[in-house]
Amino acid sequence: MAIIVNMPRLSDTMEEGVVAKWLKQVGDKIEEGDILAEIETDKATMEFESFNEGTLLHIGVQEGETSPVDTLLAIIGEDGEDISELLNGAVTTSEASVEDVIPSAVEESQETNESQEIPEGVIVVTMPRLSDTMEEGTVASWLKNVGDTVEEGEILAEIETDKATMEFESFNAGTLLFVGLNEGETAKVDSLLAIIGPAGTDVSDIAKNFTTKSSDVKAEAKETPKVEAVITSSEAEKSQPKIQTNTANGRLFISPLAKKMAEEKGINISHITGSGENGRVIKRDIENYVPAASNQSATAVKFVATGQEDFDEKPNSQMRKAIAKSLTKSKFSAPHYYLNVEFDMENAIAFRAQFNSIPDTKISYNDMIVKACALALRQHPQVNSQWFDDKMKLNNHVHIGVAVAVEDGLVVPVVKFANEQSLPQIGAAVREYAGKSRSKKLTPDEMSGSTFTISNLGMFGIESFTSIINQPNSAILSVGAIVQKPVVKNGELAVGNTMKLTLACDHRTVDGATGSLFLQTLKGFIENPVTMLV
Image 1 (cartoon, rainbow, N blue to C red):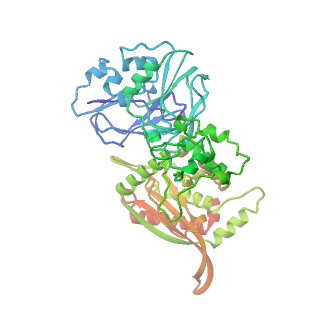
Image 2: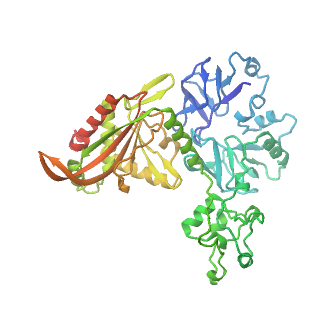
Image 3: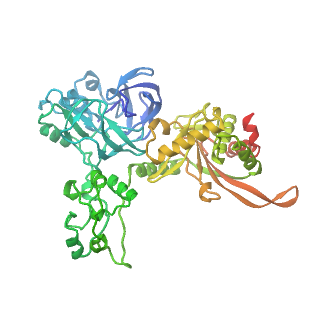
């Protein structure tokens, strides 16, 4: 059956998109995960991948044309399938494929169920696509409650995507009449999130009908809540009468956001009264918690005795799921090979010390490596390339992704046009992105478009390691610690400082000799850093 693909919402503020380039043509075979087109949003030009497989039967927006979010972009189906009715409008979008429709307006909701009257002014809000790779989202917290007045531009909720927790603002004004997902619950993109409309409007039938049409909402938040403590003593239950537990399994219910806040504040959740559904501890319970004046140790919950097997269950975050999917795909689809080198860092150490002697100036070794890589990539565009099924893209610009470890996994903010930036500019950009990464404030634009990636574990004392390529890039550089060791200089043994680096290459685009020449150029910049200023 033919699938209608709509113009996606690739940023939280995107209202329309421009097709910058089609990477597939009518008649081409499409696999799930293939890049269909490059879409220019209000923030960046991003690659849009297909979530379906089949044959590209129709293109609805030509290159250079602009189309609103949720309008017909393309149709994918079986080779030779008749789509005339879809093109003539005889079949509504929702009839063609409920999973690929965003019924965020009254008219689309009416198409979903023609027999149902939609009250005037009622707007169905769906789970937005807040990143180019987002397939589902989790409601971290609601900033509005049912009955609250909502103004256009106000923040409705915080949505956890596969890359970050982002604020989702309302594009409509009215009263929040219905919430389709509770805090901590997960649903696929385009599933029912909320309903906004005139105060007092009965939307129970609308919500019921939409929920019936969409089976995307996951019950994991209700069925598999976080196991924070297992209560094993009846006395403990008596001493904590305010804690509501699931009597079937004795588990404490807490939302992921509330758990994180409790850990940051050092609060024992067993002392908190949950105000959410089934006694679930949520964000406001943590914010309003005041420690009791009495001796809490006398009424503390008893945990499983020492020596008995015990564990905590931690649901996989959207970021962790995305990392697992993308790295698994890269590792088993790209033929990796590795080139190992060791650089003399004596001149680099002296250069950095002299550079940082300038007032209000501070650069790191990582900043120097980013700059050196950027300059070397300009001389070796093959290493700065990207692989696609039907072509290889040799990038003339250099956008370097810098891997940053965060609590839930790994993010890769991108230093754009790194070869054109000075060392202090690169240092300022990396520090800013690192701070945003750890507070989950990076935007999709700041994490997209890399042509090469650097992963540095030297600050953790790791001497050497290998990394998985961040596709569709062709290479990633792993940077180890600077180590003081015996070296041979001019035929004599001396004390030196060296650093080991490993270049992981995709053999489809980068041959061994090509990667080796890149490392030789990089060695020249690192061991003689003054050449980076010429």
